[in-house]
Amino acid sequence: MKKKDAGGGKGGLLRLDKYLADMGLGSRSQIREGARKGKIRVDGAVETNPERKIDPQAAEVTWDGQPVAYVSQEYYMLNKPQGVVSATEDKLHRTAVDLIADRRRKDLFPVGRLDIDTEGLLLITNDGDLAHRLLSPKKHVDKTYYAEVEGRLPEDAAERFRAGIILKDGTETMPAVLRMEDGLSSWDEGGPNGRRSRNKGGSDGMLPQDGKDSRSLFSQDEGGHEPRQAVLLTIREGKFHQVKRMFEALGCKVTYLKRISMGNLRLDETLRPGQYRPLTEQEIEMLKKQSRSGRL
Image (cartoon, rainbow, N blue to C red; front, side, top):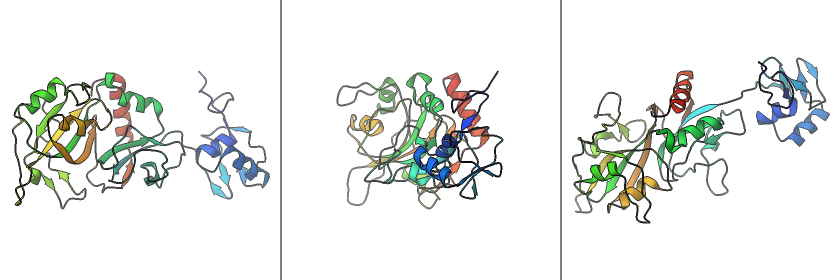
């Protein structure tokens, strides 16, 4: 069976201008101009025809004397900081993709979105098929958040989340799992992430599905303001401002929000806000396998 041709030719060949454009060397017109100026070499020889088809896995390509290795797909784990938008470009704010300084492809995008004031795990890739499966509610991919909530949650909060919260505009959410953390002190302010989970709920950090550990633990400042509590919430969809709106429906306000996992992919605790790393081959295969099989 022949490989799919990414550039219109046969046998897995790729047009030279697409090869270089994919690797962020410029637009097709800029690549053509570079070819006219003799900036491109293939296997050591100057190549002036940008439409030439090459084997991206075998050809040695240089641009202006610098080697250009072809990468078809990239996967990065980012600990998104506050103040950064989950987008590929934005006129007002820095984007999540802007933070990936080592990226080699120009077509990377964030899988899903985190609000500008939300921190935590964000997958950056150009794998559209994987992104679609991870974001589809039908695949039941769990997304777990740590939140600090102001206000007193009702005693039956866990049961109401399991039944599905009806938002103030009448939208009904899918069932979710709420668990109270052991007070705000269970997140270490001195850790590398600012608020690092100690995973007191178990060694693997997964949430109980029966909601039994749903006691209400509060902290209150000396001024007697509204009580705050730390919670973990697992949802399987991603409506606009969903986590904040779910708590608002119960009369509470989210004051801090951080995503800590997507499926079985957990945020690397060594990553400070704004830092990232490539996913390991094991993590990539795990996400692909689990997203294809459905429930994680």
